[in-house]
Image (cartoon, rainbow, N blue to C red; front, side, top):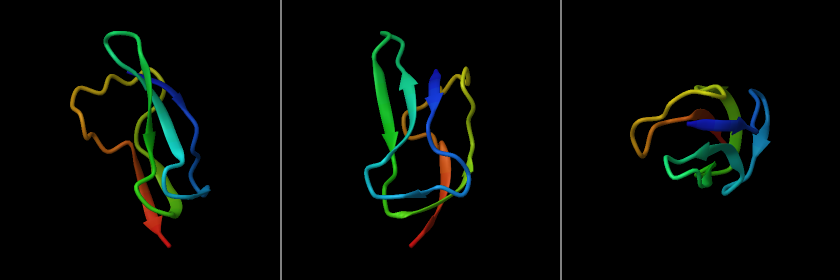
Amino acid sequence: MLADDLAKSGDDVREGTPLVYVKTQTGRGVAARAPDDGKVVEVLVRPGTVIRELGTVVARLDPK
């Protein structure tokens, strides 16, 4: 489940920047991080969204 969104559309991010925090079924929080430098085009999930699969795209980036 998405616990917190950090990135907003239009934000510049660096590789490794946390985009969102996800709470696992065990209650552990993990960060989904930017794979590359770029600008956040759109955050595709909102707090409370249930993410069912590992590797789900949570944001779209325009690479630099």
